[in-house]
Length: 131
Image (cartoon, rainbow, N blue to C red; front, side, top):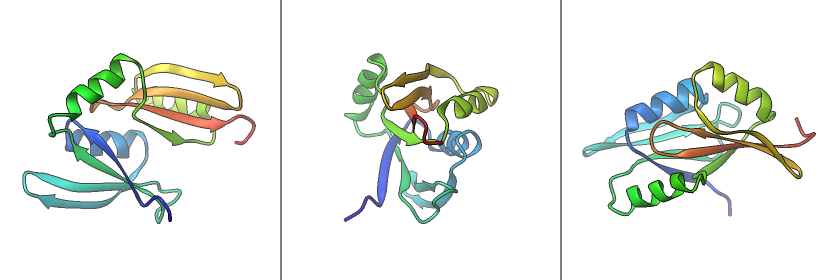
């Protein structure tokens, strides 16, 4: 068994595609109209056959309060691995990405938390001494 797909709820699919591709560097794997919305999946260019990220519309009534509670508590919706959090933090800052937590070391890992502009906080993380 392996993880094939992970979903994230987004407030605007077009804005999400723009942010996740131009800022974070993911690539569109699937973009298919499905009624009012689209089935959009992204992949990492470092692992194009790996786990896909689905950009799901935040339309279900349970989603907005869930997302708002996470943001209010500063909890990231998910985490993406990077080789060097400090370097990625500075690269993304230069692209205008807003962070709610700068690079912070915690034991064997360094993390930072960014705002994805479509209703989520996202953590980036790297193992210390691994990259």
